[in-house]
Length: 210
Image (cartoon, rainbow, N blue to C red):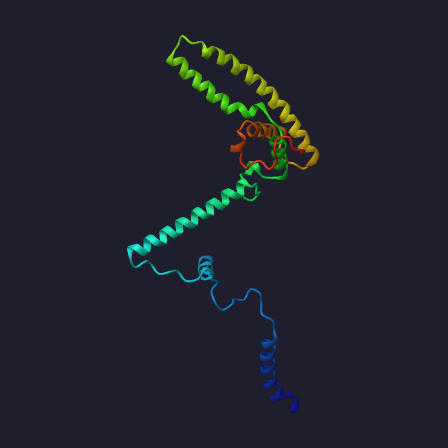
């Protein structure tokens, strides 16, 4: 009976078809790449290039260290210069943002009594030493009265200037995240510094329109 026999052509065709299907079947995404994944440390080292050989003499080692120090000093000076210029990338977190930059311009465009805070403190210190040297002079008493009057005027000016700066910053930058107390304190600390010591340096002069 012929229908009971197995056709030999079917047996040979089946393996060939399975091999062809296996070749055409797409690879699974989870299958391996055939090689281990390189570590981040090795890839960074390969990207930087070969490691220079160690110095052979003490003079060469000194020359290398001197070159690296000069490079670090140059980078430090560059960062400091950009921070003084007001580059937002190099500023401290408390000085960043367009709202803080606008507040600095408002403060720097005004002449404030608070800018005399540090000179007044130096004068008080000198009067104290003068009183110690000669207790008969009533310098200390007069200086204390003058300092109290100056401190009262400075507090009033700080409150008024803080309100002015906060109102103007809110009007121009409604999305400013700094709170009212934070802006007021920032105004006081900026205005109480000597103009040449302010960081970043002022971009506008006294009397300028902001």
